[in-house]
Length: 332
Image (cartoon, rainbow, N blue to C red; front, side, top):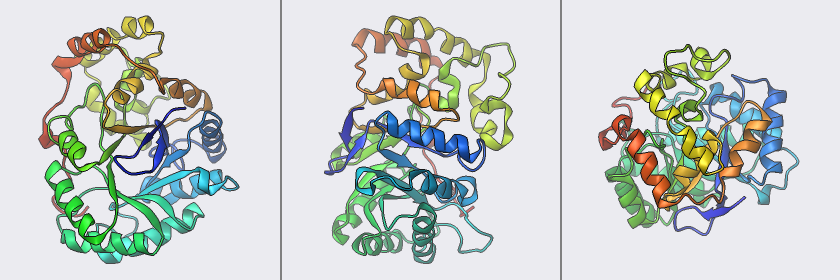
């Protein structure tokens, strides 16, 4: 495993981090989820990403149990706050009330005294940014989180939050956006701003919900048991990638992966890691062997000719509009 600094902070994270968005507590049983976490640890992954909303808070519980007994100082545990975690009007968003209650719930479920990174899961237009950042500052200063990050924030929002963080003397060091060969909306504005401010990207869905694995074939139904067939595990997220045009172009990437000595998932993960502003790529898994395969993307260097060939294949179906980085106009 290779390690990178999270932005310009002193925190080192594994190039590949393990995330449990649609697996732990929902798609796979706890025994399998624990086996995947063990596989991640065995391969050198030390960075684990979750959120209070995943599987209705169950994902944090599963991860907490799976990591129990590990040396806490040797791990980087990340979680998030924003999406609804209960039926109440204040069980959502980035108000001071919800943030302070949510961090305590997350720590209890994760069975830890602190998280290394606490992230605003979306931007909250219903709460003054000053209120949100002051609540985060109290969490950092109380020792419940070491660093602060955001997820899917626009460049202008990151800049405003970073300025407030400096005033409040807390380290806002990361953004967690979707990023892959097919989804490059952060390249035009978010990445340049982040580079200027010393903010690193922890990217999710580097395989475009699994489409870049190559297992979905044009003109054919999705494989049985795949994400595209399971409404509980993200079928709605992957649907936009399942056009024949996209799938045909993805199949044309296979010879490039073979020439590089990589599997398709490894090529997809290695591709996002070529961007120097990317600190870590999040991978998920329902089986331990998937973890073992994905981590082989760490440390891989893709040459310029290969990167150009990839661009030529996928460019017509690549999304680059920076406006696609968005948060709900109103709290969900």
